[in-house]
Image (tube, rainbow, N blue to C red; front, side):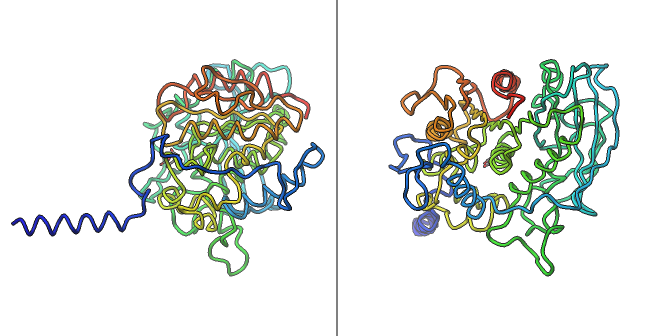
Length: 420
Ligand code: GTR
């Protein structure tokens, strides 16, 4: 009997030794954050200091290329096949809104439906918050004029959404509040662009843009996050054609994996006037080198389709990534960016998200803005910060709430200027 127990123990121990160090036990201990050195966004590949705003675009191009090839993957340009089809347009929400539904036809056979609410009363083109949603457009509001689309389940089956799920995600989309504040809100179900599971990129938008004979993206080509971000750029292409929208004031917003997506969309496409990262965490605003909460190996294992194939090189090798996430924030400069965290959302490393703001600030300052106005010593901050790099830590867990939105609206009032 004892021999049996001993054998089982030895077996269990050897299994534990064989597992990579981080696989099951995420680090939540600040004392265990390793010493690390961040790459300097203001030192170029040749080792020269970037010391003027005029010298920034060349350095920015280097950084953008690195994020493209090593992390998110290169996406196609705006396709010549892109078309828009107005599905419906009319009064909604008891006269408070104009509701439009527009299909973005990426290529024959590939489309995504955008839901757009605009304030009924407006004195001209309005600024808009644009973001993807997790559950289908019909989940953002109980409004029964929203069409019921096809939604993907985690078991990889697709089905037409049920009326019972209308409004299920509405706490994350305070539509009336956004409209009252003078903004429009536009959203697309992310699964319309690419279903969120690893199928070797056979469904979703990718196959429509393969070269003849190509069966999967090359290691430096778009993963799912890049595809979602690309879809947001196509939505902006539509918004540019809508005379009721001020397309020079479109804020791209997202929560969690869709926060990572919003950051990449805003970094890659400078037409976005403002970017909001809500609890984006690893692969979003959180510094990878801190190895706190979720880490590179874990995210690449749980979600092999999110990033380009090249990013797998950095599993457990964060120090070898030729950038860190403060440089993703820096790519957005000098445009306003808001980094929001939640106090209990340690998986997303709130401290690492804050530090990305701190270390992106020199770029924002070089470009003539007030930057972040907080240093590494100011953690944890006592109150929300509304400098050009906005920030707050909401009390509570991983979510996007009215508290978060109220800050984004106030921040947009302050920073999202009509002229660029
Ligand atoms: C988690 C993932 C996070 C975050 C989150 C979400 O499972 O580890 O990086 O993206 O999902 O999107 O809700």
